[in-house]
Image (cartoon, rainbow, N blue to C red; front, side):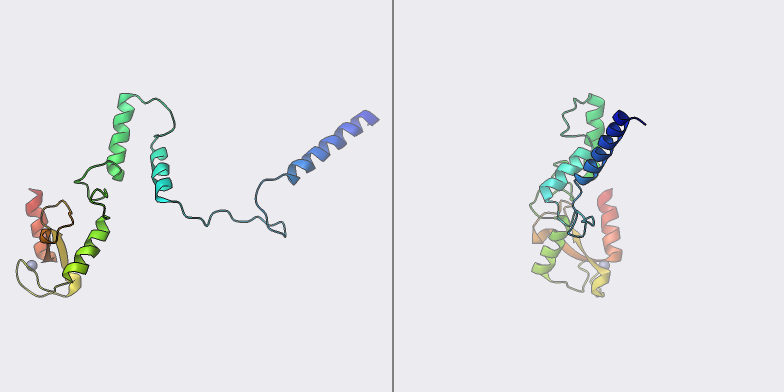
Length: 157
Ligand SMILES: [Zn+2]
C-alpha cells in the first residue's frame, strides 16, 4: 500500500465515522435511542392521514374510475358527508355520544316500551325510531332485545 492509498482509506474511514456521528435519531445522555411518539394525533391530523391512505391530498390527478373507488372507500370509512350515516358527526354529536346523551336525559328505564315487560338494564336497548339518530328525545324508545330486533327487521323492509 502506498502513501496515497493510505490517505484515501483513512479519509474514507473518517467520513464513515462522521456519518455515524451525525446520526439524526434522538438519543438520551447515555447514547440510547429515545422512543419517538407518545404524542397524540389531533382529530384533524387523523382525518388527513385517513385521506392520504386512500390517495387524497397527494396532488395526483385521478381518473374518474379512481375517484369512484375513493368515493366508495370513503363511504365505507364513514368520511363522506352524509347526514343519514350514523358514523358521520353531522348532528354535531358522536353516534356513541348520542346514546349517552339519551341515557342522561331519559335515564335507563327497565321496562320495554313495546311489550311492557321489565328487563335487566343490559337486556334493554335504546332504539332510534326514525333511524336518523337525531338529538331528539321523542325519537328514542326503550326496547327489550327481542322487540328491538323485531323493530329493526320491520324498519329494514
Ligand atoms: Zn319488548
